[in-house]
Length: 262
Image (tube, rainbow, N blue to C red):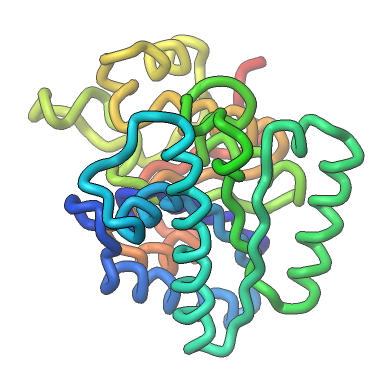
């Protein structure tokens, strides 16, 4: 299979904002092993700004745009250094691709992205993709264009005709209610039909489904499933769950392809 795996900042770092070395090592080891088994892996990774804050020894995450962009520029170097080092231990080469909203909106640029990723995969390279936060401010502002890496991962999945998108975050999946508030909330293992009502509920600010960026994940599911791509939401605390997901085990919440209301 051709897999796009998205990891969020919460998966890569401790609550202190510093790198969770043990978890990132397990993530890279698991992805390298999945690649060894014959699958193709594309990694969409957050974390550049957080890494930059640590590298620059800033007391807290900056609030002004210029410093956020500077932190992203510094942090992206650090992030790729770590990925290069850790994947290199398992004899895998990585490549960095930084995108902006203009790139995916432009037909020529989009075709160039597709060609580059396809050739990297043919060469056995693991592409690592992030939004170019030092140039594009959409993700930092959380509006417009790409806006978040769930959306970016969905766009990349459609662009390269992936078989599955896996979103790794700080949540186990989609619940019937907010599990932090409702002890009777149950994890939904399979979503066969994403209704407009469910989509609208996930987009409501402060709602049960809107917590943890669930609205962006549901939006990503709608996009990829409409293009024949399955999507899974899983907790990034356990990178080894990727083995089970690839083997079609019931882990997290799986959104089935081509079953969505228009």
